[in-house]
Amino acid sequence: MVLTIGLTGGIASGKSTVSAMMRQLGLPVIDADEAARAVVRPGEDAYRQIVAAFGLGILQKNGDIDRAKLGAIVFSDEAERTKLNAIVHPAVRRRMLAEKEELVRAGAKTIVLDIPLLFESGLTDWVDKVLVVFVDEETQLRRLMARNGFTKEEALARIRAQWPLAEKVKRADAVLDNNGTIEETRRQLLAVLETWGALEK
Image (tube, rainbow, N blue to C red; front, side):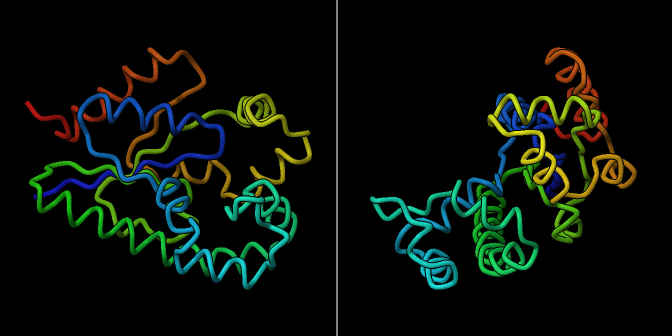
């Protein structure tokens, strides 16, 4: 039996830090953001569809999609975001499932699916356990503004494009409180993985 853990949180909650910890512990992680970057590379189907839908103005000189330009369009307009998601999400799902099948064939006992929008995309049936990385709203806003150089309005627009973290916490099998130090978060993570029998003896 393969244990599939869904790792999620909110933007700037520290989910990537936890994902890195899980990799260090030897757990294979399939990252939805990495898959999303891969499916929009030039030559991919999703890339062609995005350029057709949003125009050549979203491209950099080298032909890559300018994520900042596209982000500015879709985060300020619900309809545009829905249009982009309808192209990207199915391609990302196909890629992630193919990666998971490969890992299962290779004999993995535990697989982590790192999916920021696990709840929003209705993908909880893909996983056996949901692990949510939580920070309070103030910390989330401060970290996001510092990390990306966003104004408060830009940061709030991105936070509000996702479910509130408090809502995700209610539906989680386990929660990591990431308001403290990295060491505290690591201790919580180890305790959860131990309880779930996710670490190879």
